Length: 382
Ligand SMILES: *Cc1c(COP(=O)(O)O)cnc(C)c1O
Image 1 (cartoon, rainbow, N blue to C red):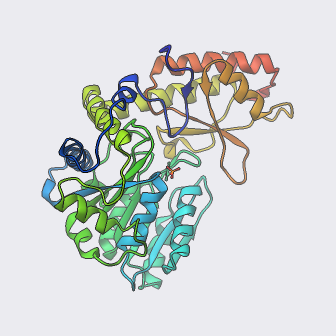
Image 2 (tube, rainbow, N blue to C red):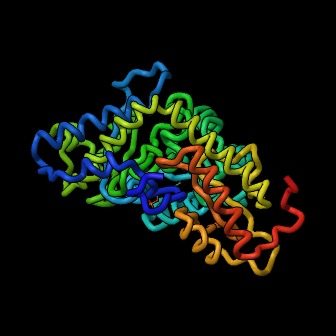
């Protein structure tokens, strides 16, 4: 492990970034100068190309916009800006982030149809279709792709097919999956895809972004329920003023993000990065099972991004103790967020490689022994 990384963040963002991404922040930029705005414009184009991949779709049919704040600000900007005054949103709530979209929608006073589901079950398309049939007011759909709550991956393209069939506009919160899982917007069928700087592109926190189907987005002028989170106005400023943001932008973060995009290219693009994450995740789940920890989500729906592990039966098990024992060994793991089951989470995205996962597993084995945790019948003899 790199010496200037005191510990590896095995969390779903902020995550471990390279030294070179952090280094480019050692320069100050002026928000209205061309040196900076040309970086913004370059980033916007790169994001569209990443979202289109090899789909063959025309770049001119899509566009992108960056928004200050953490990822939630971009979700709130999108929900608050792209649904018309007489629109209604259907939200899949099978985790904390889907639930957050529903809360945002309620708070903004936008009519809402929630499909509430257990956190371990993927989007139920029979229920979605029934809602479309019974509630013709629904104009838009929002779903989380990788529910970072559990690590469950909702079937994004299946939802896209249903939205196309019923002519609904589809917003995908791909915060923790974009650039970490192979997909393109045309094949998923969404008109809006939301993500942020500090997830699979491996930048540092400070802004989010939305990639949009241009013709759909261009109709949304004047719909925003907020000034600072007006997605259309922000986009219009960037589009017509050569990459300018409306209000002070996170210049250092933006510069780091551009560098992170270079490093994504250097790695071999999304397919190679997705393959690394998938390998990290496979090693993690297999290794944890051998130590005696069971993962929560069925293999079929498990994302290659983050994994929830169920607390062992041993009443002596205390997550905080495990957390501290792991941090001493230079790994930061993540508490759980599932409502009914006690879990902790381990992310495998960021500047993290299979050898790091192997070291992590050795460290967990040692921590379990140090803490005297009995993993019982779950542990395999091997
Ligand atoms: C990280 C994340 C967000 C945004 O969270 P912030 O803390 O606001 O950055 C939204 N949705 C999902 C699925 C996420 O993983």
